[in-house]
Image 1 (cartoon, rainbow, N blue to C red):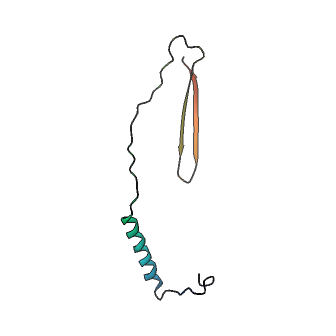
Image 2: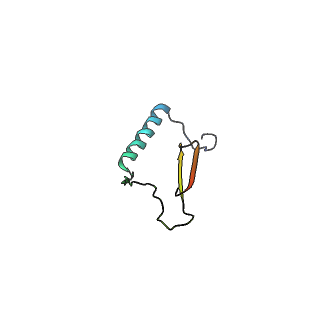
Image 3: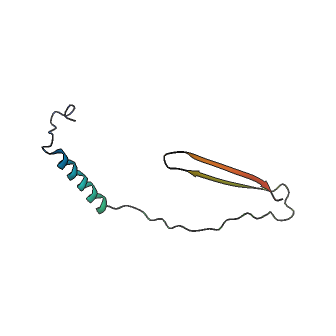
Length: 82
């Protein structure tokens, strides 16, 4: 920063200066906690064959997974009522 900003002054004790900034940040995070709690609802899901009389009825089942910052994948199965 001193190369770009001619008015910048290096702290006398850099370790102490960084520690103070970290402490200020943590106090700010604790004072302004903006986390939101999400209520989860559990729903039972299952496959049921179509009603009699339906012609060419199919069911599509899908699933997916991911690892944050990494790989993702998905797949699906299409089947009839037999």
